[in-house]
Structure formats: structure tokens, C-alpha cells
Length: 318
Image (tube, rainbow, N blue to C red; front, top):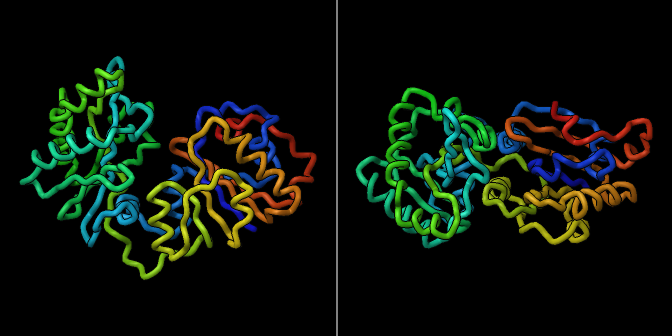
């Protein structure tokens, strides 16, 4: 079996020592650094084109219970912009988790406010927020993974219509200020949703079938479910363990691992063992870290390259 794993390097993974299973896999495999955030790398692997964004929102929305049609879609993630000394930064997590009643209140307010502007906000079955435009806006956006904990100034929409969309964002922020849903969040000790982050703009790709990159996709993300639908392969939610994955009949499985503090013990250690005993013939890791990613290819014979010594995870991202 061939397995491809997509995973963001969370804080727990970034602090793994050289003796961890993931560090061992990186030491034995062929490592390549790519100047793309993880979602953009995945789009490239599926031969998707950016124009100027990758159409992540439209692909996700169609798997999220929305009628996408030929319209232009953007993700409109609810976020918290944290005030620094002289700027605002995009706080983690992005998007923020939002209760359904609060989502409904805010989406209704946004649609009432922008009812004459040719844009409309939607919430998918997953709870994700989207924005639909009647006409393709002349802007380029940045994926939130590029911006986390950074000054947002250099990452706001750019292009011929950037001033219009910056005005839209300002209006959204004013509407969210002291919104009843935010007052309820703050009274419960939660941070306010004080803005949205636009990204992944585009219409549905005009291809009959997207490039087939796996026989089975195991992921909770609606973006991955949309990729599975477009490439006409099966998709299921991520199982509880790697053992469940190895029992499938698929020849090539793609996994999206969640942000979890125990990934090394629960997933990478079993992957290493499965490589050593030949249950995995090829393991490919796509590991995202903000604006860059590393890709790693490992085969069972690589485990015997004893001269390759392990080192801490962050050594590979310098």
C-alpha cells in the first residue's frame, strides 16, 4: 500500500526531539522544502491552477452542501485580529470555532447589510463560512496559514479592486463590533469574532475529472471531500487508527491528519512500524509550516540507512 499524509506542523510536532518517530522518518526519507503553504501544495499536486487564487472555496463549498454553480466563491473565515503595539495580527486558530446560533445571527446580519452589493454569505453543513460573488473580483488573497501571528498589513487583498474589498472588510468589522453574538461570546470568556479572512477565491474548475491522486481519501475537511468528488474517488472520515487504514482494499490512500498533540505516538510511530514490516511500500509526508512545506518520501529500504542520523523537526525548516 502507498500512503500520502498531509499534516500541519502544530506546536507539539515542532517541539519533537530527534528521538521521535517523525524525526526518524524525516532522517531516513528524501526531504524537499517547498515555498508553498500546505493547501497550495495540495492544489499543485492535483494540477489545479491559480487564477490568481487556487479555487479552494468553491471546491470545499460544493462538498459542504452548497449550490456552487458558476459563481465566484471565497472562504470567509471568522477570525480574531489581535491588537499589537502598532498593528493587528491574525490570531490562532483561524477559523475560530463558532456556535451554530452565533453563526446564524452573524450571517443574517452580514447578508442584511450587504444585500445591495452583489455578495452573499453562506454557512456550509460543516459550519464553514463562505462568500459568494456574482462577478469575479479583481483581487488576490492570502491563505490564513501564511498570516498566522503576523502583521496582517502585507497580506490583505491586493489587485485592481483591492480598495473596494478593503472597504468591505472594514464594514464587516464595524458590523461585528458589539454584535449580540460577540457580546455573548465575550461574556462566556471567548474572544470576539472581529473580522473575517477572505481566501481561496475562484469558480469551480472547468475540468471533467480532476487528476486522480489516490484511490481513497480519509479526511474530515470538506476541501478534501471536494477533491475526492472532483477526482471521482471515495472519501471517508479519518479512522481511529492506522490499523483501520491498512485494512482497506485501496492501493493508495491519502490521509489528512488533524491538529493533535499525540500525532507522533498515535500515527507516525505506527507508520514507521508499518514501513519496517512492509505493510506500507511507500510513505509520502506533506508537512505544512505557515508559508512553507516539506515533502518527504520514504520506502521500507530507507529504514536501514543507519548513517542518516535523526535531528529535531525544526532543523528541516530552516
